[in-house]
Length: 420
Image (cartoon, rainbow, N blue to C red; front, side, top):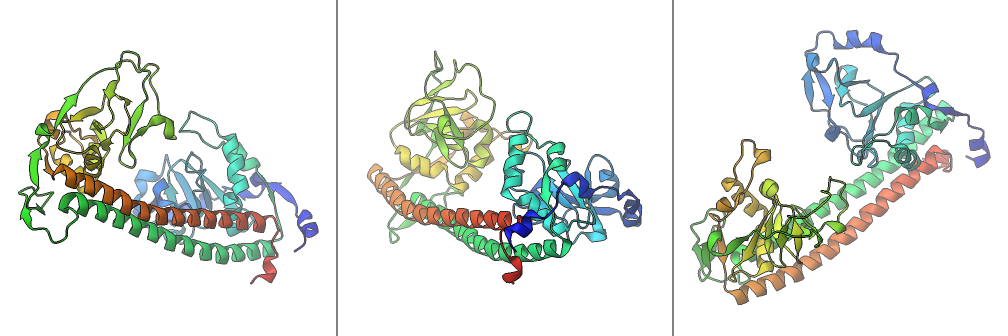
């Protein structure tokens, strides 16, 4: 295909290529059914995958939801879902009809547009980048305006050419997606290996031949016979000092990164005008996000600063190395343990208050052994992290390749007829 030929393709706005005039089909397709396919946003993947296993009673979705039909294309309208490429060609839908979140735009291809070709147009990175520039609304809740989608100009090759382009992209993106899936599985295995390494080191030590004893603590199980155990109340004391100015480094706590400076995180959440009265946190203190402790949002501060008054800060009393504590409290099994001591009506609103935390039992190896464990964990984790970073770079390159293929194919820069 030559670029000259491509330049001869007519260009039209999507409003003249798509329609929603299908209401007469709704009654026929829904008659006799009590359940209908429902797609929440999480059921739509970033490479067009669909989870078709979810249903809802028809009467619950007839109003207030987006309706779509077999062959339609759906596009997420809200950030970050739009930016991440969430959208899909609706295929394999029971009864040919379904409903989804109102955060979806639904496009029905007209007679001059192939549905698969339309889908690839909507995941073309240029469509996504331009849509991002058009977004309106408050930070974190921005949406792509409907007029942007309807007025987006598309080069429209003849239908046979559209289908050839879609066939080519189906084949090539499937190959790339398979490679991405392999790398994603590798990342999962590396994460499991990293967790297992840290869990074994901080609960069993480094010597596989050391005599073990039952700790008497269900979440710990057997520990080296020479280790002690102690309640947290004898290992920490609460620090409740407040900032006079609020000018210290603001730290945040998450289940993914532990304690980190807020300035290093890409967050858009509300931030108070003044931080006077925020809690002082010194380097080596244990900080627990009271509301999200059940998810593992805790860790040891790598530097001094201030944290939200809603957090709890604990000063170690000298029997535990800060880095050992950080590795210990960020274990998934530890988060499960503190959940037992948390208070709240709903599981998603549990809070870990100081008196409850002080009742938790912890292992206390000799200090020199704690330091050796930390050194080993840092060394071995660094090796795993290097492989992880390489796999993540490969995934990023594969995704870039995928985007470039789509962009080139839908604009006629690839001779798809010569690549079958």
